[in-house]
Amino acid sequence: MTGLARAWRGLAHRARPRTVRTRVTVIAGLALTVAVIVGLLVMYLLQVDQAKRTITGQLRTYAVQIEQSATGGVFPQPLPPSVLDAQAQSQVLAPDGTVIASTRDLTGRPAVFALAADATTPVRQKAADGVLPGELSVLGEHTEVGGRPVTVITLTATNQRDQVDETFARLLVTGVPGTLLVACGTVWWVVGRALRPVEQIRRTATAITAAELSQRVPEPGTDDEIGHLARTMNDMLARLDDSAARQRRFVADASHELRSPLTAIRTGLEVGLAHPDRAPWPDIASRAARQTERLEALISQLLALARADAGKLAGRRQTVGLSALLGEIRATTTAPHLEIELAVPAHTTVTGNPEDLSRLFRNLVDNAVRYARTRVCVTAGVEPDGIRVEIGDDGPGIPVEERERVFDRFVRLDADRGHGSRSTGLGLPIAREIATAHGGTITLTETDGGGTRAVVALPR
Image (cartoon, rainbow, N blue to C red; front, side, top):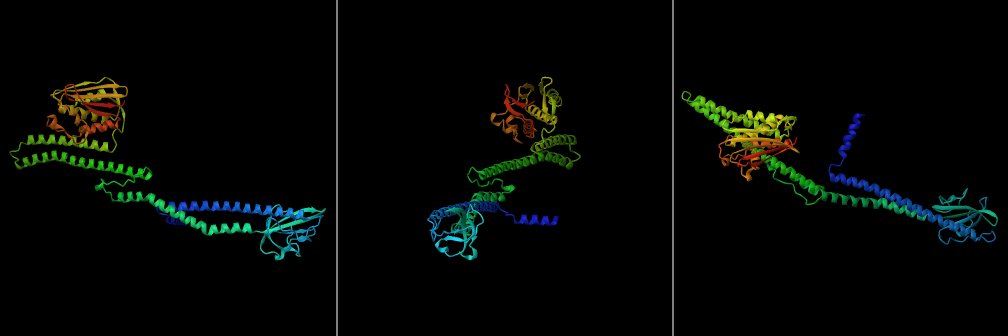
């Protein structure tokens, strides 16, 4: 039984229309078929009821006419024809079924119908012994004429009902299929025209590769769902293109930065190995150690950026004391030629990831130490919407037009700031990524002495 059910589901799945255009057309066709059939059925029932009411009214009027035609209890021979229906016939029967009077066409014939009781509405039946051809509508009324009971039978052909049946039969055979064919064709054309931009989008999207992210899908220029889809896809492609471009630049810059210290280490070792007896091995080892430190710092920064790109910054949060955090950074910063001032109110706290916050402020302090002449000043304060930390130096400063660019990866302004520095160009970008992950901001301003001040605003 389970196998049969699976086979049935598989058959139903294969029989299901595979395109949206076909599915919409089939659904519209089925819905229209049901609507047309229901509408025709309602119209048919209304027309049948109307025909029945018309026949009933005509036969009752004719029965009254027959009753009124009797004079002194005697009916005329033959009975008068109906003034409303030329096809109507009538017989007047005695209680025992004997024919008392008939219309001209029924003269001399026995009772055509035998009705046991009054029929309030006409009944459809055939005449006895085939006296009259076809199916007839018959109405019988029991009454008294001249003091004796009689039954007035009035009847007529079912032409009106037959016409209704024939009309609706023709509609079902020819009108409904034709209407459905035209409607389904119209739906097919309209849906195809509406989905034409989607097909163009699909073809363009199929042609887009990682190397051709600059392509864009065609926008139909409408404000409907398809237009929104095209614009959304183009926005997504623009973001992917920008992300891929940044990734390529990042890989190229990272490769260059990693190659430089490795090349320096290799060159020093090769020179020493070429002249092992005369090589200054302590100097070579010292330079290799410095380049190794640079490599270590660069790799650490690259890993931090990878975490930022993966959205894994500020994952584990807790209350962090700023005074202790900044005090530790000052104590572990090697800058014998500088004075590092620290002014942080006791018990000032911020909520965040301790390791990430330490990296944020250490990068800013290292950047200030790298360019300061004599002094670095670190201050912190509590504001209504969070905490504010300022790290300033008395170095050459950063031009206003460059203050946002320095937050781009691998951007260095060493030549402009007058220093030959070992900066990786990643400290400020990482600091901003961490601040953003904590819901904060970093901006650069100018100190009173013309140096650079980094302002960090973080929520508490």
